[in-house]
Length: 135
Image (cartoon, rainbow, N blue to C red; front, side, top):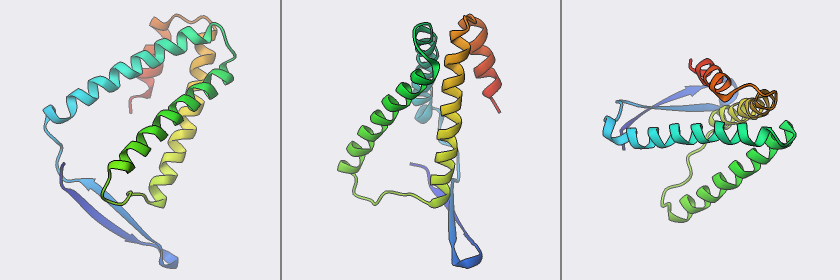
């Protein structure tokens, strides 16, 4: 685990926001395995959307995808909390960002189904979508 720097912002009304950031990037050997697994997951995600979009409503496909992702995440959270000794780290700001990310990915999933359902070849749509998402 890398050490974290913590910063506190005191807001009007007495609220306090705690920000934390890793003080140093971890070694490549620490994160390359999970990064490659993530890349493979994104590749499969795009392939599976392409396959599913040919035979179902795009909104239903997006909702089904989100239900499965939520169930997987909930299961992993239950396992993590069963093994945890420290309290769960959460903040209002973190929750707000996670909700915003959820809304963004929900729209992206439905649009991916729509684009794939139009018959756009995966060799064209996936690079445009993934390449366009790099910021």
